[in-house]
Amino acid sequence: MSQSDPGLEQAVSRVLAALASLESPSAQDIVGALMRLPPRPEALELLLTRATEVRWAGVALLQSAVEHLTRIAPAAPLLVSLLDHPHPGVVVSALDGLGHLRAEVPYDLLTRLLYRPEESVKEHALAFLGRSEPARVREVLRGLALVDDPGARKRAAFVLAEIAKGVR
Image (cartoon, rainbow, N blue to C red; front, side):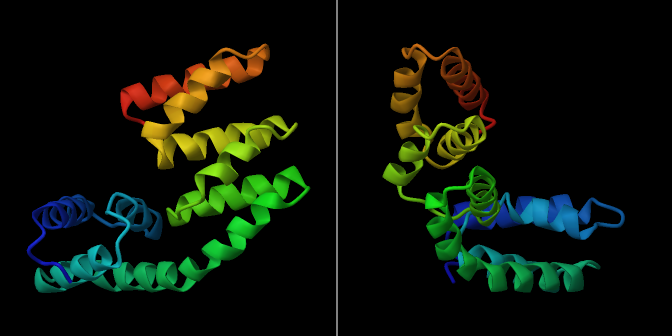
């Protein structure tokens, strides 16, 4: 574990302070807090260590959430393979799952999804690109802003605005 990484230490301290400020944190609160950590295993390990050191009352629930996330992380390759599924609901669910896992998805696979006929797939793929590739997604969005499809232009404008606000 990289305990000398000041950025990681700060992120862990912020998450632990946010959790400690809650009177009775729920599992949802904890998972939400974990999503604010850098997507690195040592971040989870450091958070557990710090929570134990300060004797935070919710450490058992935190441990349970971390164990659960660790068990489901191997699901990412399966979810990536489902992005080629013909049913749009399967693709959307796979994108949602990959987003929750903060998994990496090949850029070319995500951009291919933008050309599927289903609006829901395009919207979710664009949102995923906005979160995972904010620097590269701008070029995709600029291209979408020029197409003849008003829906594509609207989606592009929405994601660009969210990136500008720092939401994605």
